[in-house]
Length: 311
Image (cartoon, rainbow, N blue to C red):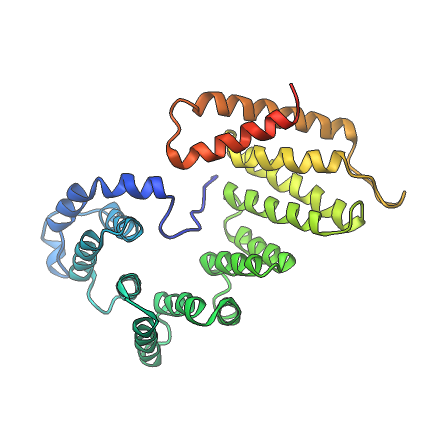
């Protein structure tokens, strides 16, 4: 089953704002059932969605700066699952980081994380918060080092691999960024946005290589395959069609450095370009009237790309 992996814990800004508008109903619903075991067995009925909604509201509230609602969510989760629950400790740490006034306050939080891990080294949320905090205090290199240790111990953690990929990308280490994101797809092969992100990284890797070299052609071809897979999984995925058109256009204009370097057939590339162009036009037309501020920029960029290709 195809799915989109949200690689950002706070989600998109527009979604965060929309969710915080539902805060009263989410908090009220959770408040009516928030109690710990064993009393939760005989209390008001609850569902997994109840607490998932509270967690998502917590993230959204931090993103929008609503500390009061975030605090209410944390109180509810603590009451339901206990102060020592690993998930709750991680959320509490995130809340404290958000409220920290300066680096000294963050260093105090880091020391608290070290104390927690000294007594409970398997507290995964705290380990992740510690790495995130190190990125802020010590820079990306320390965070990369810690994430490498983490992924060696927990090789199936897609969130860690995703973060590692973005850190490598921020340092210009594209091959390592690509490898890390490929690890994500080993565990969630149908995440269309991850395929698209891999396509973007492959495309950039192709641009970084010498024009017309075997490495450039290989990376651009891989980018086309990744973008194609993303739109195969999600037929109206603008980001996938946008990337596909970029990569195809670049490959069509590429002149191999030697006869030994084979390009995909030009006729097939041209058909892919026509497909991407027509789909982009359709998506722009369909979404133009209802686009929120966060997606308008994407539509404008897509329109500019279509305009560059001519009528």
